[in-house]
Length: 376
Image 1 (spheres, rainbow, N blue to C red):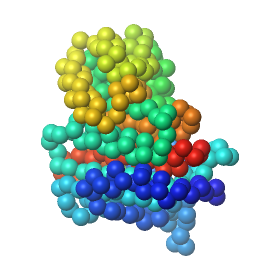
Image 2 (image 1 turned 90 degrees about the horizontal axis):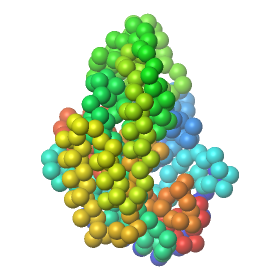
Image 3 (image 1 turned 90 degrees about the vertical axis):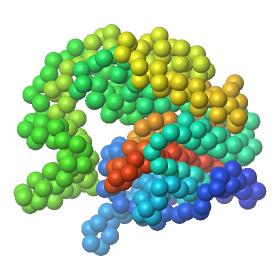
Image 4 (image 1 turned 60 degrees about the vertical axis):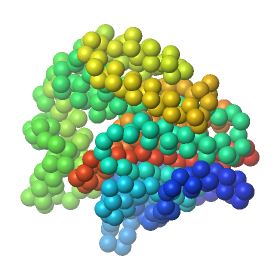
């Protein structure tokens, strides 16, 4: 396994300081994480990047690829309405590049709060802290890239699409490959619904669909293989049924979504482009853009406006983000090696079993990349 080189202690302390001093408590996560849960939450595409470990009893785990899911679970177990936790430790992800480390240090912060207002302020705070932590490493070539999965949902709503089609597009908003597949279905006719079981699951909430699939497995004496959990398999069957039954986009609608996803500009110009592309049912979109004005005002106190860009298509390796997404990039390291990443993931808490309306936003910084001497 390729291990990332050590960072000088003073650099590590400088990168850590903004996150450590944010009134958060120190947290940690077990080195081994449940494989099925991570695949259900982060997406099957992550499998190739995980280091899988099998116990003597046959249970599959993986070396932690990240801290977010583990810390979110710990927060829910504590039963708190709010909490903030910073962490520092090694994460493990397989890499296709021969020069990429597979074990590397992350320093991060996860913030949880009760449902309600204050989302924009929390978003700006976490992005600002990530910027200051990344900048503390010494690089002078950094830029802050912003995106928003929820803005895509509001834009889709403005186009006044059929309910099934709109829901399917929103579901794949944070998964570029699936979204581009959808955009390629222009003008296609409906199919047979993807099969009886898929059709039944498509009419149920995600948790109930997974529970029904587990019940079918138990009655049939079927043991799932390959590390896929019932939630992941049910979600795939639902997507298959919806893709077969729902109408496809028209050429004009697909062109509008492609143009939206291609936006990459200084925020005020980017938002002007969004408004020009929007359809007539734009009440939710106007509200979302107003929220962004508030975020940018707060964020301007931490990150320079002339080094900030907005790109709606910005996504991360983990697809549980459902609101703000951001990256701090270095010109020298390029797009594929961000110094810091983060975003909002309110829906993840519900998928972990949280019955309350809990809000969640977090960030992670790679100290080696933040350091001017780091190139990984």
